[in-house]
Image (cartoon, rainbow, N blue to C red; front, side):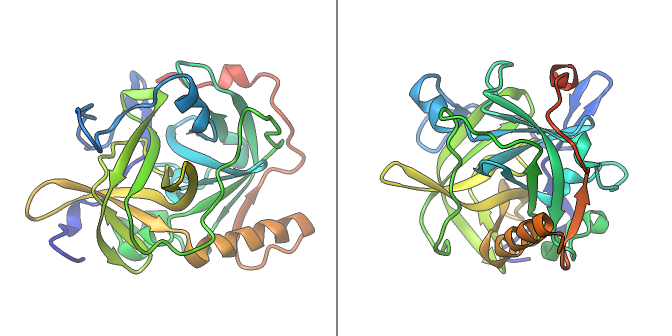
Length: 284
């Protein structure tokens, strides 16, 4: 690892649900500090409307953050679709996407029909930079989100080389509302992995790393993990979309035509909307 990363302290950022609620895995509590670049709650009104495509992904055992990038496709981290304790893949029917969740109310709730991850990804490999660099998953929803109030966030058409970014996420002790951090800087690069100055906690896995230009946001990376530097302090690790998303998008199209190619795809056939989805809502 580069620039003083301590290898043994790379941590995934999903939140595990325990008997007494959400239990974080060895990460510090979020600090809502003041000033530019500080992690803060997304304000209500217009700002909340801008980020309705970002939501919480519930598994029944844990939760992550995720982003609607098309009316029927959601982007998240690959490790979020594997059980955090057993490393077994979740069934698609285990997953629920809650778009624009705020104070217990989601703008849209959808079941997941299909999960797609890169064939080389192995969740049990531990803090491995190669695996972090493949930590992307694409979810096909059982029903599209066709609402004018929720506009999918486009993925970047050009590579992310430089510039500050914004992260919108859900996390431990802020499970019911989105938080935002603006002005995050790139600290280092290694393959498709970017180390960032963003402050992240458990639950932020899968959150979008956004390039914002003239009020228009586009997804350039997905949050994967946190790490500690030898010089002290925590950093966040994100994986750029680059060729990986192209592969998953092609496989999503292949899944629709019955040609899955090399992707690992977990499918729940014939699944529709869950009328009783409210009963599956997880309140840590």
